[in-house]
Length: 126
Image (cartoon, rainbow, N blue to C red; front, side, top):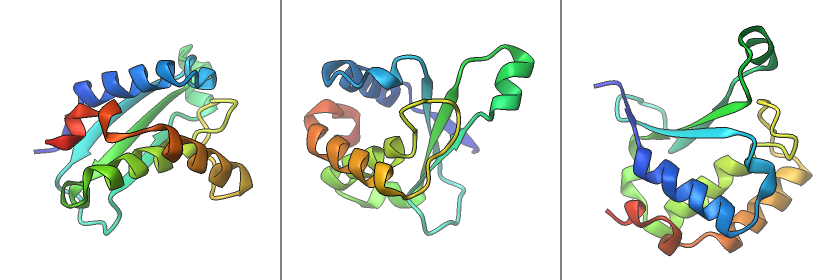
């Protein structure tokens, strides 16, 4: 089956970013995919496009949030927290790098998880 692109969730995410004025995400493209084939115990991962690819091919920073099989089994409010968690891995420079679980990560995670609600992401209620 492979990866399934979740266009509705991408649109809802972009709308939430604009709604809450998270300007540092405006210059970056964020795609969301679902991977039912993963056997990982994780429920989501984030992938960043490294700077060498950006500069070589003239691309802007890009990220892919990969939602895994376990994502289906959690509640909507926990799904929103997972999205907030993955977004917190994107540094404010939005350079394509992925931020580790440091102080800035936890600060941003707390902010995003307070801002976002299930109402911001209707496709997560399915």
